[in-house]
Image (cartoon, rainbow, N blue to C red):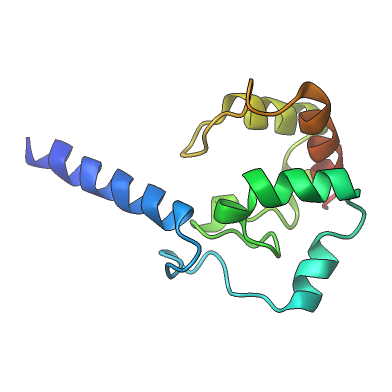
Amino acid sequence: MQAAALAAVLAVSLLSGCASKNSPEPFGGGKSGNAATAEEAMAGASEAVQAVYKQSCLSCHASNLEGRVGPKTNLKQVGARLSKEQIVKQIENGGNGMPGFHGKLKPEEISALAEWLAAKK
């Protein structure tokens, strides 16, 4: 019973750290980056991809892609770890603390976002 309560508290604290833009990063996963770092991180992304990222990804993955909720949310070199197809699947289905965006984002938005992220090596 205590383990379940602890797990629930931990889950809520992780999710609340993701939702609040003013909260400190719980695991040191993201450092508040300056504008140049964010601009460098967005290099190669179309305006449409940047808009999708800012609306749907920024709160957990940060403006500079370093991540806000631990090392697994760092996207700076995600293309070295995952193929475009794997990234599409992750965005659509979520998992490991990430919500799925199937039905929330258009397939072409997911594909464009995944293509841009897959190039991050």
